[in-house]
Image (cartoon, rainbow, N blue to C red; front, side):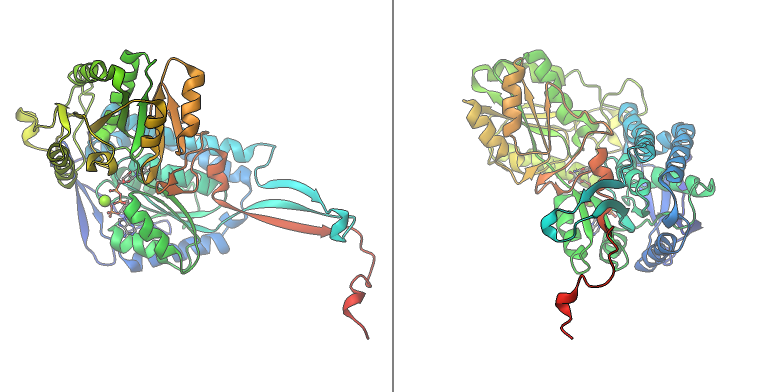
Length: 508
Ligand code: NAP
Ligand code: MG
């Protein structure tokens, strides 16, 4: 287990510092409400110090001049350090987030792959940062000249991270950001910052990166997050979180026209076609909305089921839901842990009440869990609504908890139309035994990711982007690296034919 009461400091310009306000924030364990640790409540002045250090490291320090090979070496050293510290960091992450072992493994383990993946890309002889050579067309009036495209780092980049996958989501930014040669400042979520802050401290202490290249400033979104998004010396802000705060980030970034990447909320549709293998489809549908107690932006929370097989599907869903083991997330037998906070529990419960009052039929869960274990901590069991319509609040708003809304449909066109009738466009899924038919439906869904006969699978190399109000830009894959670069065209004249070329300008 993690040490009780882990008091971490921020890491700014390679040094461990408390907040200039001297105030702290307490982090608690969602499974039992015990204190896990404290972090500094950072201020705008702390952000300013981190930004100036990042600026100096980028503009004047050695990092701005490093070769991709040197940066690849640094990323690989970070990956090796993380692999060594994984048990310790996983225990901290489980305590601060209430994650099961399987979820914690994704959260802490995938960053190792990400660091190595981007290290491999930038070391490749097919250099990512030097693009195609373009001879000038004759009509451009500059024969015998050519140019080439370079991908340059953007500069100082800030990453603002939510609490549901606080570690890996930081590395979706840190790994490509550092690989491309930027300097980075991370603002972790106030309620689950400890594993990230600890690891950034370890990286700095190991001397893997020069001071100021990777800093972490903790504290509230309102103060630290807003200061980063608005700071005139920050060149890019990469935000993962709610759509509501995403809109605010765009607003704050606009006066200085920063590059903005937003990965926001979702209300993803999972369409079961009438030819699906129902046992598999039901299992996928449960995993889609129960992984990490439904606190995943990708969650498949609207299930569209064919009316011809509706009752059969509902029966199988209720049966499978009863086989989920809810409990202490550190117990290896547990398959579902608590929700993240008291606020989250109350929000989810109010959505359950809203579903009931709007007339949806509760077919599983929806009541407080009974037992000694559930007297402390924040618990909501799997909850399934049937006979819902797509215009009910439970079908339109992101609940971010273990609640599924199952909506019947008559035709494939109806299912696609309802699936797309949302402000969100993050993910979707199709369950079918007919591959060609499933791909046809997948192509019609207006989302950045669609799974067929599975859910939640993502790799380092698969681009991830939110469509509509689920986001702007792309993370992961080669596109996720390019998102930390700007293209630069360098034009070279090869003629060198002396003065006279611009004689049209001079008439004396
Ligand atoms: P959130 O409230 O939007 O917060 C996300 C981060 O932004 C936190 O670090 C938060 O700081 C900070 N923040 C809050 N208000 C801010 C402001 N005015 N200016 C700047 N920063 C601010 O989201 P959350 O509740 O932590 O996470 C749940 C949401 O994240 C869900 O909507 C989920 O769908 C979304 N999400 C999306 C993805 C994706 O990739 N698309 C992945 C995971 C989660 P504090 O912690 O101090 O409040
Ligand atoms: Mg929040």
